[in-house]
Image (tube, rainbow, N blue to C red; front, side):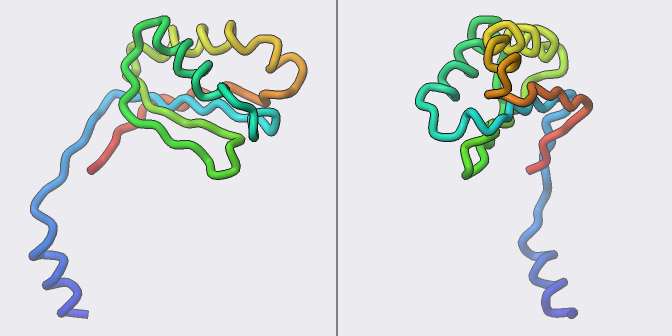
Length: 106
């Protein structure tokens, strides 16, 4: 209604974006409750010098999603595929998915 619109107009002053990002989603039921999985993921990311912009983890602990600059995503994907090759091959991890062309809006 009009009152709600007036409240929104008074609260929203602007927004900011971070563009040219890619999302990396590491998931698998074998991650749930396994200590050190997130540490191993971000250790691999650190090893290639990538800048992690945002991190989200499912409450079920079976997926970790994070944003990195588009220019760094190929190196990140290769590092994760290498670090988790055995877990991917035996099904503990189901995928390392790359989702390109993202922006973060705040």
